[in-house]
Length: 572
Image (cartoon, rainbow, N blue to C red; front, side, top):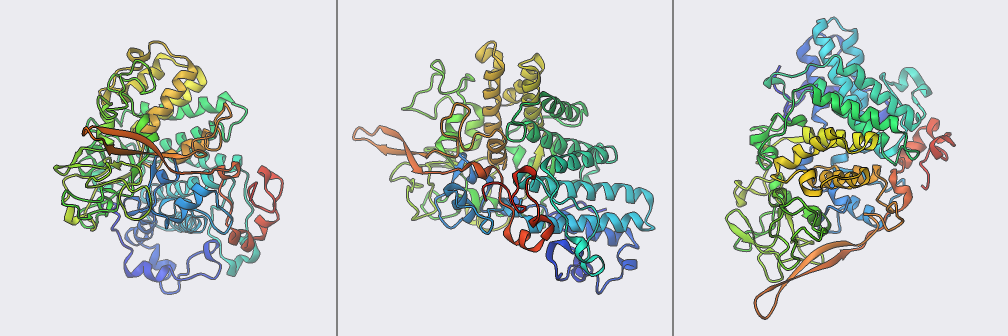
């Protein structure tokens, strides 16, 4: 079996399979030109079908509009990105839904992928293909089905649970399925992953990189359990949910398969593809790259020519989240932070993640100060940074600037990696048991990779509440630009307001850094509001698309469960 790559195609055989359907995502693909006997008679034909499902995984490296842009981590100085602008202005309606990067939580496309998984599972299970093939590939398809389900579940809550192909030609109105409750959907997802984890292999051969493993299934389960245990879905603070999330993430650790990759820069580049830290990733390769440097990198080269779009522009809030080299937060009076020299003596991850004024990139100093070669643009007249910063993380500095607009980067996109598992275990275990030695040791592993002193050396003893804030800061810094921050602020329920009643992190002005040169040639650093934001309580869930409610009477009739009115989430 060839290695699963983003460039895998389905060739003419599948081109004839995926013809248009009358009832959109609820209907099985037509098989007008290829008989079932042909499609499911050989492993190679069946693999073409499954490979197409892999190929539908979000192509994030080619994306322009990332989840971090919906949060307080990143901004971008354009107005045409619809999700970005609608989220920040709270202009979300059932007919105007941001669907995440690369349609990650788009209802229709995800249910199309779920339908493909159901068809594959049904047909392969009933086929005469070898049992070992059926066992492995059906488990893969079930994993992919749950992966697509979990994005929808996080965004919308309860969903129709559909595990068989639906066909209106033979089933009529029986194809219309109501939404299960959020809790029922969660139980479906985690039950599936429990079963799948017992079947999938501990490791795969290099030729099969990109296929899920036992660790991938447990990691996805542990993430969903962490989401379910968090304040958004667990307002009563049921400790048993935290314990279950901790146990599943600890089970991933206990597999002994994964480890932190020592080089934080190369972890995200081609050199780090399928490293010991990677748990499940979309694969890229020499025949098909992505335009990540051109879309995300610093806009102008040393000569002032535009070579990229700069779509990752870190906010001052994110920059301020990075600690000092001594491990202390910059708000700590003993940290040594100097606001007149804000980029000195910061923690190692800062320099590997953020391009700031005077940082070296491709051999030249990027200057975002007023009048610099990448001068801040507080308006929307250019692609130049809107915040005074660019991202460095996940970008390959060795790529030639002249190539930046072409698809020539080959690093994988990791949906899940081991550092997140460590952080998830530490968070859940702290909520369940407090700051135990095991929790501290787990967080210290991540800090040690960045040459940051341990929590004990930095803070001494800490309380459960103090450690919660430390873990949340570690998550924000460690996982920034990996499409995690949105889900974290949503599940912690801190987007609209903080527990103390102050404005939430997505309900306050966003800040950039305006740098000017004074008469004595010193630089003046002025934190500056770059845009206002508005987040309403209803936005913790996305609205079900109106087209779905109009099309599916079984959903349109639902009221009461999870606060639904005519199938719609509260507030919409």
